[in-house]
Image (tube, rainbow, N blue to C red; front, top):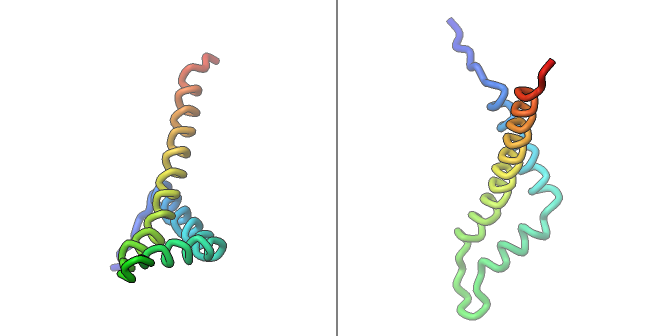
Length: 88
């Protein structure tokens, strides 16, 4: 007996969106990543706060994904609301 994983349309959208955003982030925004990591090291004390730097590198694209999902959800909500008001 095989176990089949059923993924909803939203799950597929979420997975694809995360993969695309993180791929674009790590391929095209190397300068931004380098800036974040360089600024995680204090120039005054020499103290390294590399955890904060890496959280910034991985958290910023996640915020972009959440923003895209919010905008997409709002557009779909408006489309469904407009369809409900139409009288044929």
